[in-house]
Image 1 (cartoon, rainbow over the protein chains, first blue to last red):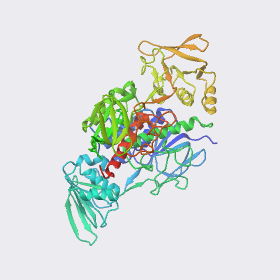
Image 2 (cartoon, chains in turn cyan, red):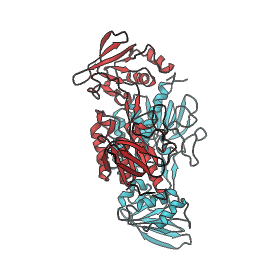
Image 3 (tube, rainbow over the protein chains, first blue to last red):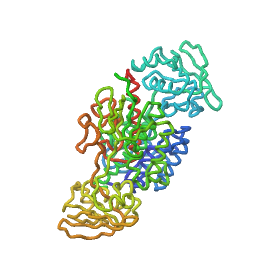
Image 4 (cartoon, rainbow over the protein chains, first blue to last red):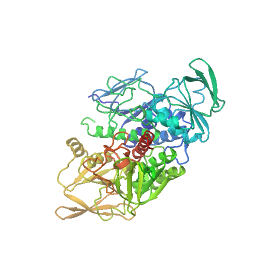
Length: 312
Length: 312
């Protein structure tokens, strides 16, 4: 085998990738982390993180990611800011091609490319993200005590989270583009029985309005009539999309939504020397703390692979 | 079903239990965390934690656990300091019996009772833990740059970690009670080829010596002859033992060492409403950060179970 450029390449610099990078650099594995933007991932657009354990008073998203980056940097993690165009993960020598045309080789790869919430693509959505627009009720529900909020969606996640939000909010209006929910019967029953939950059927949000934070949503019904609903928060819970464009999906096993299937030690199904951690994994719950935990596990799995590999 | 005392009971207050407790309290699940000693688990006896992501300069073990405890407390987590004697986890109503005789009931249980390293039971071992005596090379290897250290054990973990330690230490002496290693052939080959690794065969540590930190180990050979080896660190890597005395092992599925088998969402195999997180799980890598991540996942799984449960 040709001598690889690195022992380990980590693709993606969110909480999973940074934790894998911290462990790898600290473990003196010859490692490169490739990130296309700034390190921090989705957390960078998270205003305030209240559930990363041991930051007892909460922490701004960018500050938490600054600290994670500094932590990996302290152990000398090498980083490259570039977009990955394609990968070949078969065989002992893995190949990562950047959009500059440069090709890098390595013995092990950890995929931490993350995921992104499905957007409603309404005016105001992007501008007010983290300022009343949220894609994670688990993360942000407690910030909406005694407020009136909207939930967009009709699936299991949307209805379960609408129920969760009633523990905090004064009123929760579920806005759904159809006339019935997709959520399971028991969740529907609970939602219909919950006095704090209202429903707006056959409608979509056409604009999210607010100066410094969300003040209202404009609603357009399927019959083109419109209305305005004053709310201080909008939870958009219509699905999560994997960042898998640059991945060789013919070599990897994915679930029906395109998320990567791994075993409990983060080994990608059907490949050796390839790991995944964080939001790109096929799993139910996407949180900063479990992404970080998976990053550590993936890196230790990779170290284990490298030390049991005759050529490494 | 009788009304349970709690929706959720978490057994064990280390990083996994505290994170589950933080998520549960923040999610307004009616929760009790039961801990027999002080919250913090194994980390309380960890001198310095250098790999909990975002604590970039490192943090004392007790301080990290103080912060995790304060974080859960901030959201009002109810805690009870008591020893669990037995549990009945079958059926919809789970029963937890304390050694006081008190019985508590709940709908869901998260088991976070942890594990402990197997000790050599030599004089000085306990006194010098965290002061040169370590049970985790991943955690502590970088603290031993250019030092001479000993590793106890002959299995895969011991030999892989001895190799890992050579990246930092000047010299690593593997002390093994037999005349050959149990580790796989490739690890043995690498260890024998590594000039920094020495072996002491057919011998055990009979005492760990040091005033404020480890200064030497006294070795007793199988033929009763003795020697002294000056070292500043001793890594005891002879296995991990699950804290499962209080668990109903006839109701839970375990691996051959007694660790709990879960799926990737931390659901205990063969039971509903029962979860496990952290070191008590059957897994390869036991770290603070992945215990915490599993605690969050387990709690969200439990919330999902409770909200999809007609009686909850």
